[in-house]
Image (cartoon, rainbow, N blue to C red; front, side):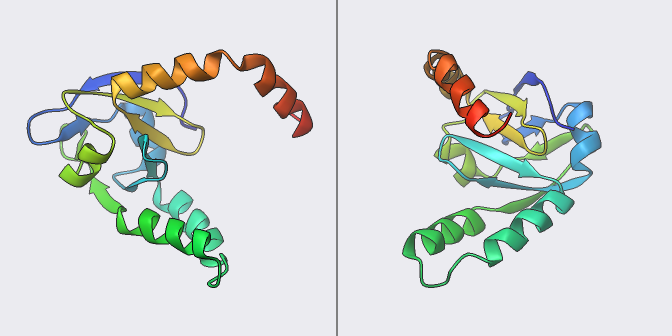
Length: 143
């Protein structure tokens, strides 16, 4: 299970250290892509396969579904850990989320997310103010 928040440096080549607790869940090779435009998402091969099955079922005649699928798939890449426990984040993905010298890695149960610190801090501030609304929504979902 992927939980917690970690801050690590991104070196000049775009390499990022992945915490050992996350490496245990993700494995030696995993898929990184951009789902939201705000952060990157890293999936273990098993999670990627399960999610891909759901995506394959999207209607081919739905323009929104197909646009998402194109963007999501075209930005995906397989990352492999080096001996120091780092992955290389491709330049195009770093540019999309404005990732520079530092990254925030968060666990989202079955997915690891990679954020630029400024974007993550802004997101947390924005969403923390709607905590009561979130609790109501969770009750609607039966949680």
